[in-house]
Length: 309
Image 1 (tube, rainbow, N blue to C red):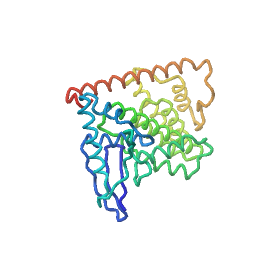
Image 2 (image 1 turned 60 degrees about the vertical axis):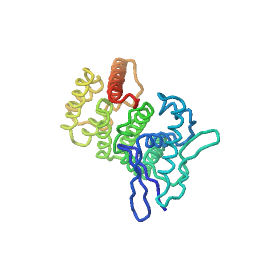
Image 3 (image 1 turned 90 degrees about the vertical axis):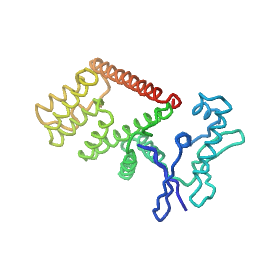
């Protein structure tokens, strides 16, 4: 029996896979692929045809838009027939015209595995995370081979991309703390490095790495981490590191530092208000810059082909 195998992280890829490890790629026209991807990302619910028409063919005359949707659904059903030509059962529909992907069908979806494991990890209390769950989380994080649906710029794709990127970072942050508690500083450091690969402006991660490096006997690397943090903030935000980060840097330079030194686990005190306001300003600046970059990309796409967006 063939299994539908779909990857949404990085570039979209779909294939049939059987027990003999034979792989048969599935090639879909862009409109059919987009519809499938949207239904997969909304696999927990059925979607009305009106919503799909407005989403994908909103600029077309109503009659033409409905015809395009019907044709695309027909093509998708044909594409999701098993290699032997049997009916797939991958698409659901109702007499009211709702359409959806069948979550009970025989398939493997990287996003579903990723989201299921990491949601479980992040909703557990830290002391309830087991080594088995940590291993599952590492395997799920490995599925994140790139941002969701690279090359897609529709609003619904961008929203899901950011949501799953944040879940990726949140999962790494939880593992980072779990490994530190377990005394596995090297693994904790690796998690922090992977977070910064996605978001170099996370100053709290720079601080945590500084503590971990110092506690692991790598004081020079801890100092270097501060410099990386400072350069990134100056380059992107034209700002200096927070006072808490600077104090930690000077403490590391003065002598041995515990992994718990200035860990920032206490509730914020009034004296820390300036630091918190500075952090808020950094986040606001990042948000504004991200919006500007997004608008530039959208305008460039519309200039090339107004039909895409």
